[in-house]
Length: 206
Image (cartoon, rainbow, N blue to C red; front, side):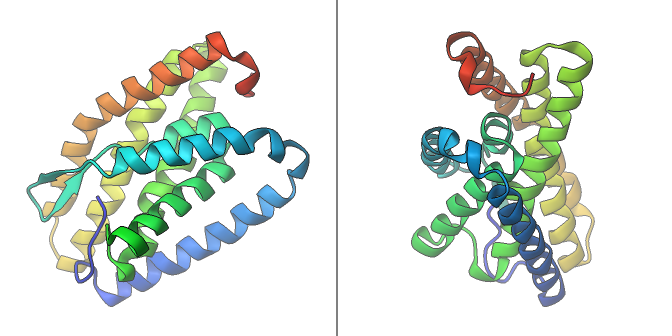
């Protein structure tokens, strides 16, 4: 999932970097407008960022020249909000790239776009939509967790496919991440459901 240097064409790497910078600018502005509630979320933001950092360091290689691992984007997005979730994932992925060389510097825009933006924002929409119509936290968070990994794998596959002029990465990345997404969904659902019962003050989507 962490795309290394040399796997993306200059056009794809440049485009994804520009898209990522644009969304990060929006995220920073959104967070700045929510200063009143920001202090309440900082402890959870910090704890989730640290936990996601560790979880993402465990990766399994798959066919197609890349690997898969848990993301945590849906979890952080649901619990601290989509824009802080994007910031959390950006910090995690940046440290992994710059310090541990997990993911290439030339591909950092794509990696943040896939896991830190697509994985967070789209899964947050899934959660809110499912919860709105069903009022079931466990179902919304499960589907959000599954979708976060699946969509991240899909966008990664599209980027690799566009760079290699091949459709193979799209099928490989999407299928494998859709399968692992079931585990991500279970973990997300378990944590969110537990916090809903034990620490209802943490959840603010109702």
